[in-house]
Length: 506
Image (cartoon, rainbow, N blue to C red):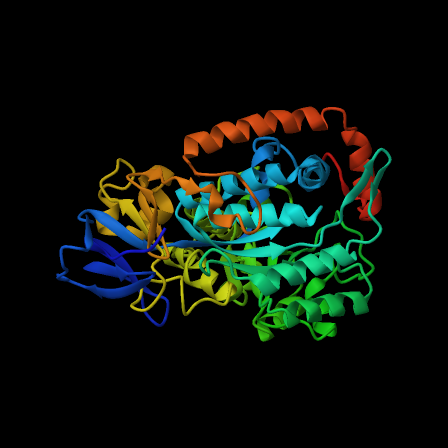
């Protein structure tokens, strides 16, 4: 599908200045090919240009999701009342029971939920690496969807047996490394939209293995490396200065591997010392409020008074698991904003005071999902804001919907952060190509990623995709029906040295 020229006429355009302040202004936006070519009032165009009337509409930068496990669509609904330990055996490790076909359709379902919610770029921490075909099927789905992505190829601790629960001894077998090099060398895919990154959490391995992996990744052109990082009492720690777990920031710094290409997910309960090191190296953080708050990872680090303002500009927003929460970045903006305000306000009330003003603004959390997300993936010169010459990644909101009416006129940023939902998004454009129109997802081309994995022929609608997902979920449920999840839970505790005594009822 080729990009064409489109004029978005007469909308409220959200323009960032050099200080990241947003200036809404009435203007037209012309995109030609995959780029924004003009932003100004009363643009004149020829008959060949498609014109979209944007009166009473907000034209926003596309949202950027910097941490997501897109394959988990078949798991949706099962983590509603679960915590981190439950998620490990009941969710994460069931990747072992996914076939490549499950991965393709699961990834496609996850990406299309993102797209529907206005996400135009996503970092996929894709920890389902049970064969080269699993990874290639995942990438093929992203290519078919039309989204922009960094696919985090992930050497995964793979389940060897479920009873007794045991993991494969070597997570960096030759085929794992060879597949990483093959994919990275062949990238980018999807007309340049899909890059290969490295997602890695195996820091229990010897230093020489970690350093070698990072060097091999860099050698084949991988520019971004992402890792989970949280300090939490559920994890064993030999360091009395941390509440539990391994301080990955300090570890990578000691290995001379920490720099601005590293993106940490969560970083909850990070120590002051590690925060100082992270900031000095300009490494980035993806904070995922919904899962962090539910699964007892700790309070999000962004706009957390514990760290004053030191980490705010390192942060971006992610979804983490759409198996347990929605894939809407504006919803995460809202949750982070109000949870941060609530903690700050309560700290004042506890001291018999009330705040003079809110501690965080709608503009600040909006930037976490746009310009700061772009910096986190090292693409701030291409995406994250609306400017001439940047990629044509746009989201069009209906300013007259029941939720947005009046708010869209008074403060369009507040309208998006505090009032909007997925139903208010009328149009999503990525690389100049319309992927959602008239509030409905466009069909996707199954053959777009056929160089990687054969998903079939033709185009499919969302309805057809949904039917396929329900069918595959039923088959998946049959496969896992006989698994002993209590055995798996105990196996996870043993394999990852979790501190069971710290898991308590009250």
